[in-house]
Every structure is written in structure tokens, then in C-alpha cells.
Image (cartoon, rainbow, N blue to C red):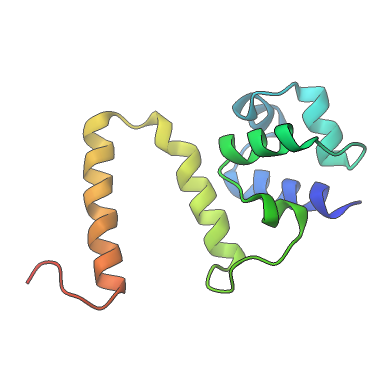
Length: 115
């Protein structure tokens, strides 16, 4: 199996999606997506970018290139899973989440945003 197929499988699993649901979310046919997962075919550049955009994946990660050392595979999976569910949130929830994320970023940077 090629690197792309195994990385795509890992990413879909991390998102908690079936292959059919991932194909729908990516906006491509189930058979085409299954061929990518099985390593029978690889997407062209436009399709790769579409998959990455819609499934919150990094092209370099799916292609097996080294990624930023600061971001572990676990972090990438969590980011992808969060990104996949964001469209289901309403505007109020998204604003609240945005504020929480801003506080967490400031906290991780060592400043006290609440002081």
C-alpha cells in the first residue's frame, strides 16, 4: 500500500468517519475515494487539495512528507477532527469557541489573558 493510501486511512479513522461519509464530506464519489483508500489510484493535484480542504488535512501529511516538528500526528488528528465538526455549529457557538480558543492560545504563550 502506498503512503498516501495509509495516511488517508489514518486520517479518516481519526475523524471517526466511514469511508462513505468521508467521500461525501470531501465531495467526491465513494468508488473514487475507496480507490484512494485502497491504494489503487492517487488523486490529481486539484482532487488532493479538495480532499485536504474538506477533511481538514495537510497535503504534506497525506503525501508522507515531514511536517512541522511542533505538530505531532496526534495534534494533527485532533485538529482535523475539530475542523470536521465546525460546520455543524451555529454562529453563537462558533463565537464562543473562538473566544475559548483565543484564551487557550494566550495561556499557552504564557500570558494571563484574565488578569
